[in-house]
Image (cartoon, rainbow, N blue to C red; front, side, top):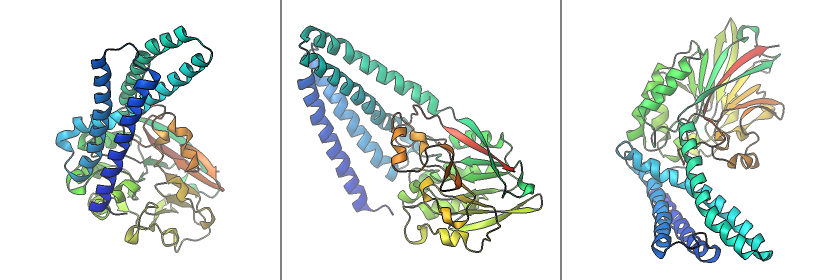
Length: 382
């Protein structure tokens, strides 16, 4: 789905509608639930200004990074995107307070209810701020997660091969080229045989964010680096330009195609498809990607989203990202409603699927309950 002015306008209108709805909700919450019970009028008005102002900043941020160079205003973008996460935890805390208040009201505990609201409200605010602060720190500290994946179908020459799966870098909005450089250094420290870039490397327009990918040229793996598109590359409207840039960096972009790699004298097929939201030349085509493969081939299938699985096509191992492991608690509980796996190693319809939580963030630049990761898959023949 390509960016259009109409799409951007509709997106802005939707965000403004969201802001208006939440503003009315916040006003109702002030009056009906007395979450600032006893606070002076100026404090109540200030809190409403903060709520509405933060949401407007979030709306402006979503428009800004899709249209202009984000580098000069990254601190503002960081604040705008952070507000969404803070608003979620404030809302969650207020709902818990409201439920407890309702119970006390039904029980006729008027004094206890007022005390709960007076004490509970600042506690909710402080806890929300603490959770966001910790999540912001966690998001800056990617870890290495290692898995051994065994298969009797794996050629013996590939036993012990180390494949680094790097997904969801999301460079451009809150991170620039320095972040890419840091991630590249961490990947190279893992001594990979092959590096797989699983999509969603960027946010924003290619003419501004493209150079932030340049450190990827220094990825060091004897079997090379392969990449596929993610939904964010496609949503920018600049996917072809991004994929072309990756190729200039020496990366083999799999556009519904496959390559045959040799290790220890044995071949393995690595196939890749575009993300499922692609249309036209960017539409995923598993049949084209796997065309010419043989039943006896060991096939590694790279698709940005786990649900792009093609279990009946002879795939032995799928490598994916996209889920972020939920990124912000408790959204990891809801990812399985859309995807067959959240993170880690799972067997789906007979196919081993490795899903990385990804190294970056989408939306709020925080991670709570789903630390960023670089995934190292060691292949074992058994």
